[in-house]
Amino acid sequence: MEVKKGYKQTEVVVIPEDWEVKTIGKLFSISGGFSSSRDQLSDEGFCYLHYGDIHKSNKTYINVEEEYPEIPKLKIDIKSISPKSLLNDGDVVFVDASEDDEGASKHVVIRNPQGIPYISGLHTIVIKSNDDSVVNLYKQFCFQTSNVKKQFKFYAVGTKVTGISKTNIANIQIALPPTKAEQTAIATSLSDTDTLINSLEKLIAKKRNIKRGVMQQLLTGKKRLPGFNGEWAVKRMGEVGFFSKGRGLSKDSINVSDGLPAIPYTAIYTDFSEVIDYSRIKHFTKSACETIIINTPHLLIASSSNMLENIGKATAFNNEFDVAVGGDIILYKTTANVCFLSYLLSTRPHRKRIVSLSQGSTIRHVYASTFDNYEIAFPSLPEQTAIAQVISDMDAEIKALEQKLAKYRFTKQGMMQELLTGKKRLI
Image (cartoon, rainbow, N blue to C red; front, side):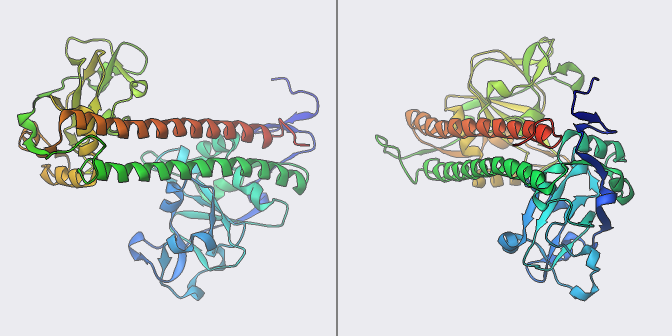
């Protein structure tokens, strides 16, 4: 590849001639955390960073003072902890184990100017700056570029669980602008984008909480929509509909390119919320002869799972196009509004009740007979439809915000790739 004037090709990335590429081992001292299991943590003691908390975090930093109440604690004599495992302002903490290659580069930068005792824990690798050549804010972004992630994937080893050693992390190279002023300018620009992303994430979380509250009110009849009154009728699901089963759709028979839209049972708890969004159908089958095809409103229920939160999860198919429905899916065709039913069965009391009715040990199951006698309080069909529409409108608003969030995140990735490699220079 031809390198344009003013740039140079390094071992890992093309950068401006006045930039440098340095290894983590050159810039930082590297050590391990203090191993303590999750069972030993509580609400008392000193702040403790478990590697699982890094994996779960959507952020690349932890503000110790602001997040203090939520940070797990470990009751221990702080004098017994090596200073290498105590986290100071600007320290970076990586995980040393992950279930996939992408997670191998997960990390957080510590914001702790107050010097609150904070212990880096199980399966963590701590890097501490040897000098002030790397600005703290720059650290939040410089390990996220594609060229750095490729290096982490290269060094990650393992099958079911991948790990990376302190020795290998030391070999990873990052690009550095020549001045701290340029580092700060780049990091500030990316941080401003993060602020937009964080505000949108909070708005989406708020909208989801409002939706849950509305569902609790409307789906139980505690609050009625204008124009509706009268008693709700308690009926068995078997009284207002009938059950059947999906068939086929083994892993070998589905693809992700073209053919007849298909819904394997796992898609119910990985791809859809309470109502199936056609644009999110990502499985297809070439053959329709060994599958069950539906093209009218149905409730689809996952009949088996090894995870309690997934067993009996329902989603509503409310369209009129052909779709193949796989085995381990209970199909329910009913005179009731399927969207109303799906929203209702997703509420916490019904999820808890359905899980309690499931059977099995390692793999849990529910059956058509489980739901045949399952009692639900039904308002009139017009009220069911009105309730479902109110919640559906809220879903549409949340979806629009999520699409906007995805666009912001994509924009940030592009900005990082250009700014953190010097492809675009800030004035």
